[in-house]
Image (cartoon, rainbow, N blue to C red; front, side, top):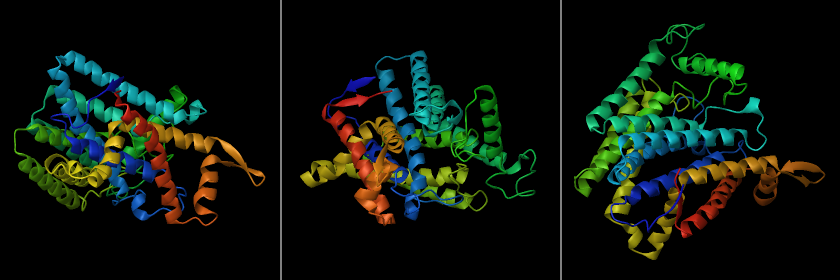
Length: 396
């Protein structure tokens, strides 16, 4: 559905959410699209296994913001008279559209059925949105949401720590706790993939033997979304703006500290979305939201000068149609890899031709690689800016 909306400075709109969402989606495009994967700055790539980089904070921040936005969205729909049945239908509908988009992008542009991936970024977003939304329809009490999140995080740790993995044994006894191949999440991913390949003739895994957006690791990802919902409830409360800023910041520090502490026995790992990773990443998201809330909604720096407005504006544009920007970036990348052009007697992809002749000139470095990624970010910005100018906001 396409909506035209009044100026983003409308009363009660929390600009910090839009700004942080815009920064997150722009950074997501940046780290997903380097010119040369062989030359990438360490912080602009995922940690290979245990550990944390800036890139590892992108996806959990997006899920966190989905939780924040869910609170505002549900309250707005309830104020318009939507009943629980209508809201439930809306949640299922949006989750289904997100999942369909993921399948569409997975096969684009050739759609070889056997090569399609059922797991994916949008699939995880769909599942987290669905389950978090249904939980929020049942309760929006802070204590209840905290309890559900704790059960998900502790339960996931218990499953990964104590449940024997068929064919391998008990973690920490027969193998390391988070062995890349012999962990419970990877075993379930392989089983699910074998089932879908046998029944649906599709459903490959991103890493062949496991998937970073796998089935079991979606449980703690739901907790990430619920933590965002709790932050949204906090922002909707009657507390003063100062109390909200300080509360978010203190919660952020507590989350990082808790994640670091749990890391000692259950390592921070984005691939498995471990419970310690959820807490550490949520802590960073809370600090980011606190900073944006202070600057955008308290100090309102965007209204102080033309330069401040210019610095804030790109993130508001990106944040206004985040899913559209993500889909657009994926389509641009897929097409640029699919279309080939002649180059000195051989056919090369448009992606490689632009990178070679426009950036690296035969000498690829980390700097030329990130320069190309910034070019892709700017390329995705243009059509979204055109939608912004017309005040068109696509609502799935």
